[in-house]
Amino acid sequence: MSELVEHLAELTGFRDRDVLDVTLAGAFRDLLHPRTVAIYRVVGDGGNQRWLTRARLDEGDAVATADPVWVDLDSLPLLRDHPARVEALTGQTVVTKTGEGEEGLSVFPLATDREVVGVLELITDGALHPEAQRMVCSILRIYRNFQGLLDYSERDTLTGLLNRKTFDESFLKISSTIPVAGSAHDARRAAGPGSRYWLGMIDIDHFKSVNDTYGHLIGDEVLLLLSRLMRSSFRFHDRLYRFGGEEFVVLMRCENEVDAQRAFERLRTNTMAYQFPQVGHITVSIGFSELKAGDSPSSAIERADKAVYWVKTHGRNQVQSHADLVARGELDSSEKIGDVELF
Image (cartoon, rainbow, N blue to C red; front, top):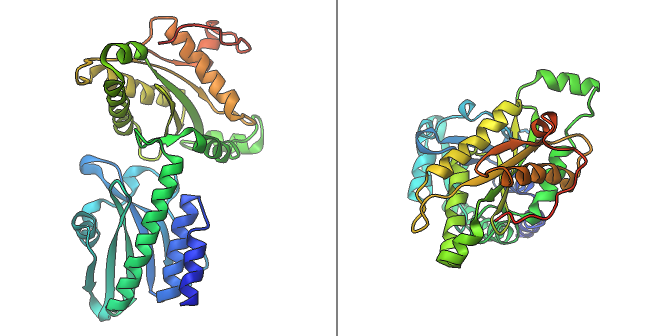
């Protein structure tokens, strides 16, 4: 019992979700001694949903393995390739099977307050004992409750996107991996795919008039629907934030500016084509900038904000790169943003 309590204390001692999943897998490995324990999350959408490994420990492993944060979606196994996981996921129930050599497979659904997001998979010598199953389910309830507390502190309550408080930590993790221009590391990075990072700011055009004309409840519905368009327009590992009001931010990884531009254009065109209830069609203005070595969150945001300001004063409903605007002479890289009505 004391070992179980110690693991629960360790499990709830972290706020980093990556560490949390690794700690959960480690706790089950120590408590149950399975051949393999793994946590898989569902990523992608439609007919291209895949299994992302969040943490996996085999017998004898000193540390857990996991898929990289920026892994290519198409390189991951399809949902249908693992029917026991799908059964646990869709049925929201524990699935147990016994294979060759009396190998036992136990799959438990992993849920948040919003949805079932993945599974915990245990491979054991023989079937997992019912008492052990109950213990796993009890720990997973604690895990779910703790995830709910993290969501409450880290996510916007209306849209479910990450909130402003979580942005700085994510930004600093990313910026610490960006090499100084001209270094040997920078030269190696230039040859590698998907090794550059971008920050985009998204602002709804004339959102104040939406609130004034239709009321704040309809305005909130617009924000919620736009957040869903963002999820469908960007990749599963792109980080999506609501900073407040009608202001949204994206942190993403792309090979070059052209690919980043395409991603933001996809959101712009999807938004313009969408029929919002009562309101009809709306548009968004988007500015983005590449992250640089030594960037602070405020400096990167300022560059993207300048690009948004330019869009707002030049017709709206566009995507503009800060670097491109500077290269064209439309922006002075040192200029400050002035006062203007952006809504």
